[in-house]
Amino acid sequence: MSAPAPTTPQQTGDAAALTADPLAFGVGARITAAVMSDRYVEIITDALAAVDGAGLVVDPGDVSTYVGGSEADLLRYVTQLSAAIAGTGVHASIVVHLSRGCPGEVVCVLPGGAGSRVVELPQGETTGHFAAAEWALYPLADGVRDGVEPDHMRDIYAAIDHARGNGTFVASEHFVTRLEGDLGAVLETVVCGWARVGRSVQHVTSHLTISVNSPSHAAR
Amino acid sequence: MSAPAPTTPQQTGDAAALTADPLAFGVGARITAAVMSDRYVEIITDALAAVDGAGLVVDPGDVSTYVGGSEADLLRYVTQLSAAIAGTGVHASIVVHLSRGCPGEVVCVLPGGAGSRVVELPQGETTGHFAAAEWALYPLADGVRDGVEPDHMRDIYAAIDHARGNGTFVASEHFVTRLEGDLGAVLETVVCGWARVGRSVQHVTSHLTISVNSPSHAAR
Image 1 (cartoon, each protein chain N blue to C red):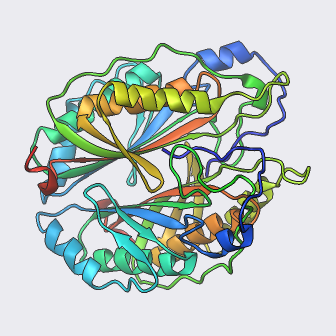
Image 2: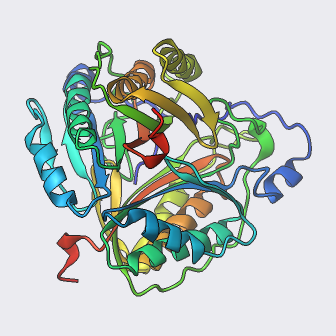
């Protein structure tokens, strides 16, 4: 369960150290790769073996794999994993759940006033694989700080502009934004949008469902 | 894209009518069923044919299927669909993204002051199929109304208590709550938790990833 942090800031401990360390700040992803083939175990095992997990904590599970670490390392990891799966030509659904700013579950463990974490927006890789995806982005803990309410809509619009700028934006649909394009560009859009909103909001999550090698995409 | 509604209430139009009509209030789900078999098209087609879509708007897509309608109808639909897939014995991942209170995407279309929608918590069905799942619940638009900030944590705790009460709660993990049990009980927990938080918060979303027939669950 993931709920917004308390809106009343309470600066305790070393906030700068909390926001600088990705694991302390709770920067991570849960990834579910579902491969629609009888050979799913072999395909996922091969894909995991092809991925560079440097700098990351990786904890596989039966529902998803948790990966913790910096935004740039996460983007590299999820891009390599997804590209390895897409490269098999088999239809697959890849779900990526990103979170930063709340290492806890029901109630945020970080003090509400830990503040936001500002990072360089990582650059994606071109994979050569087409992806269609649905994206939701949630700025959660944006309580008033120092009497000023953070303008998370400014960052949401900047995230959308980024998607329009790199050509991945397709349309707004019920509850999500539809993205299409190179798998690497789609993932860059989502990781950068999430990190960008995180410049002003402490707790930001994002959910992405990607489809690769769909029979519906045969014309691409 | 889905972002919180403006926090400044602005009551326009007939708020009671907006909250009473599930489609006007944006009550719905996006469902992605990924079946890990060469026969995935046949299995999904058969499952969709077995489901009762009465009262719902159903719009299939290549990434997910959008389903709009009341909470009770949504619970019945997603339970029947998931149970039909689980009944094949094939390993599958089923992702359910629930939303209510924000029919729009980037910016909520409903006025911030439309208010919350209160419904009876629907009863789940027992399916006889084991499921493991990861759950995130997001109360989004809980700005101050009438000078009172809604106590969404009270409802989050009530949602967790519901999960403990029906035995589906397992543990808090990074970014999610782990649920296990009968597929129908897991879905009831999530739909009721979402509707319960929606009694005090207008815009509430929830994301659930379910695993059925996993080789990891062979001992169940």
